[in-house]
Image (cartoon, helix red, strand yellow):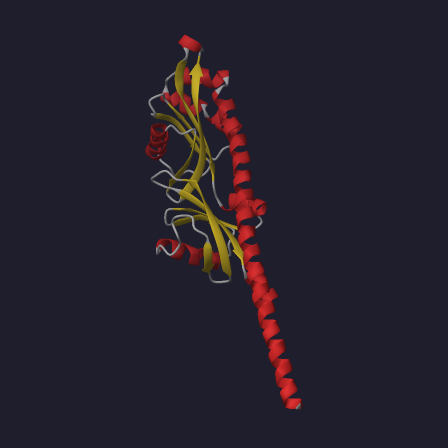
Length: 263
């Protein structure tokens, strides 16, 4: 009788713990899914606010009388030399001035490396697409760029003097700021390349390998992924979808704290 009672008690207790664990796991997975969706919404909200601030900076510079006077000279060497003052005023990582037809006449970069040809290729693509904000990627560097026309006069006398492009490099520091807002890890990618993230270095290397071997969904679907130090549930948002370098942001929530709690 004692053994039979003990078996019944153990069976009931085990069954109860199994159902409790299953229920808790279901609720936690739902909470994780909701958390990543909230993180994506928080990220998009911060991105929109930052976009408004940066676009205002570009518009202010394009409207300066001294800028208009400089562009009216139409002399490339003069514009290149004199535009350094405006670049420092903008405080940007990338500063481009071009003629109305898209010919670049001034290029300044916080980290040199791009040629005038590279900048002109990206600018021409943005002009063809009619963009006032774009993402430029080349040689392992990604810039968030805002464009504004430089004009003089008004109404029938309106004349376009040139085009201004102000860019800010998207790197690990930017990813860290976005991660704080999102409340989770952030990974910014373009095509099959990881640009910046807040992940541990070993996880970055594994994520880069997965990207190059096309082991992540390209359509923005959510899912789970096991990296070197942890398993993550992720959701992604397409920041810029135009060719040649679509930019995507992955919001990644580590599952180790969740799994530790369940255990």
